[in-house]
Image 1 (cartoon, rainbow, N blue to C red):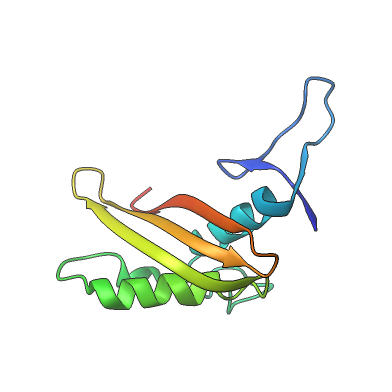
Image 2 (tube, rainbow, N blue to C red):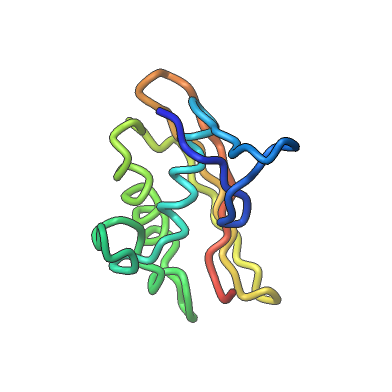
Length: 120
């Protein structure tokens, strides 16, 4: 599958002004990042996509619930067959959750990505 390359949510163009396309592991990692950066119900075309941001904000956060929600969000893409690792780090100064995940694709490729969820 191919997708437009995004950086900070913006389309990327090459030096000639053409849109940059990505595929394979990079494209899957980008799709996973988009899913984890989308609050469930936020996108009107598919309100079921994303994760429940409410689990990641506030006090007395439940690490197990957050890990389960990350796994649920990643497994929404049928190309991801297994979530191997989820590391959560709270940055109180920046008011964000830093999420690093490792997942296995149906091709056997392992993708790893860091995503931040929080007060932007």
